[in-house]
Length: 149
Image (cartoon, rainbow, N blue to C red; front, top):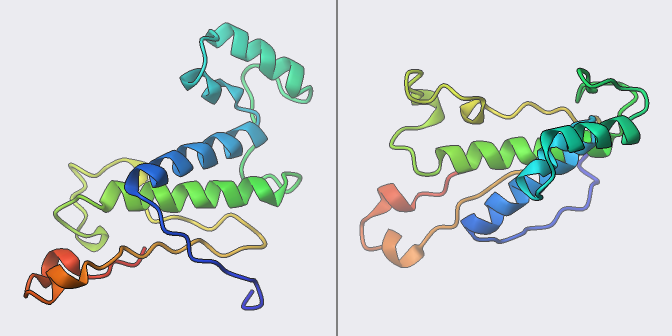
């Protein structure tokens, strides 16, 4: 995968939160969970269940596809991987400890779990926290260190 063309994308935390939400929605739509759209529209749960039956003829109301389903497009897995990495970063960015020092009583949710690669064709995205060099060189390195997730 070293031949894959890569880019660097700079964004605000708010933009990362929006991208995370859109990646989650995209992945969930691929696996037959249109109910996730309820956050963005006035449709009832029942209406979204009807949409599910129309869009996903191979599913019933109580089923959905797995992100690891071999018949699923790898695009779905790539979206899920993007979501996992962003969710992980956003969950840990303001925590007083690191993932290695996880407090299981306070940091129990899956959002604190390390992302697991599901894509067959792409590596997990990497996030680098931008260093504020002026702050860093004034001797305040603890809050300015580069964090790689």
